[in-house]
Image 1 (cartoon, rainbow, N blue to C red):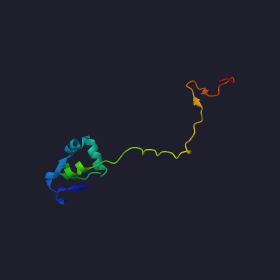
Image 2: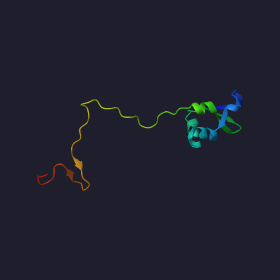
Image 3: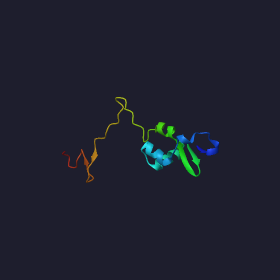
Image 4: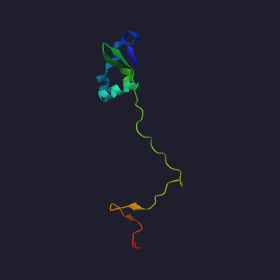
Amino acid sequence: MKKDKKDSGEDLAGLISISEAARVRSVSHTAIQDLIKREKLSSLEIGGRRFLRRDEVESFSPESIGRPKATQATPGTEKRATGRIRARNGTSKGKQKGGKR
């Protein structure tokens, strides 16, 4: 959401630099640039520098990241293990050659 100074009627006092936004959020400069690139935060370019609205940076709440947590299985539907564990030497534990355990 890139805007130009003349297209925006925003008050310049509420704008902060990317570096200041990184300090406010306790993240890296690159993290703020990534949020701008992914259009999670809007920015404004003035004189070749990019600025963000302080209130938007402070109120931003990140989405949860990573793989969703697994839901618990319904009782009786769990997958059962085969009971055979491969040993480091390549033999399997459980049934041994020679007939005796």
